[in-house]
Length: 162
Image (cartoon, rainbow, N blue to C red; front, side, top):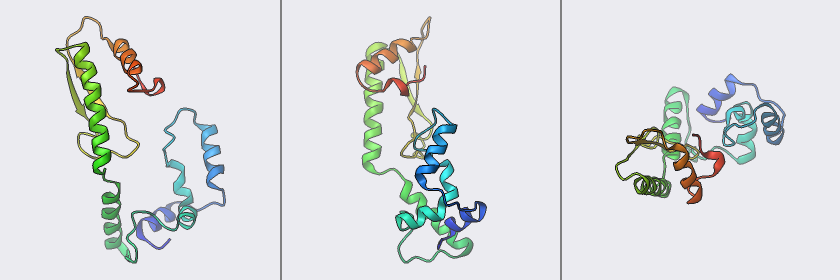
């Protein structure tokens, strides 16, 4: 692996000859309902992935990452590559707007607040959107909200946690 981050990852884990499909099959047998976008076990295959895909997408072509300064530079390049683009930002903002409209239609005095990684702009492509609904109810109306979000096709049943 010809760059700093890959070298650090490779030094911590020895590569194996297992294919990516074998790894995903093994991982799916061990853990049932885990994030399908997880890359947890892929660190073991860093070199194989690098070779199979011709490098890592954040690595600047013909840029030589050397030593600690190279690691620093690669981390900055990775950060810039992972930053949400305008389309990702707009799609998430639209989802928040739609959910907020539903909540306010149900409970006009309710307030919706965004928190977490979206609010701080540190979210990943697979990150969820954390919303808090603030209001006064004698009983929490979470099932009502769940039902409306499903009816309006805002969320899939498997993605709602009540």
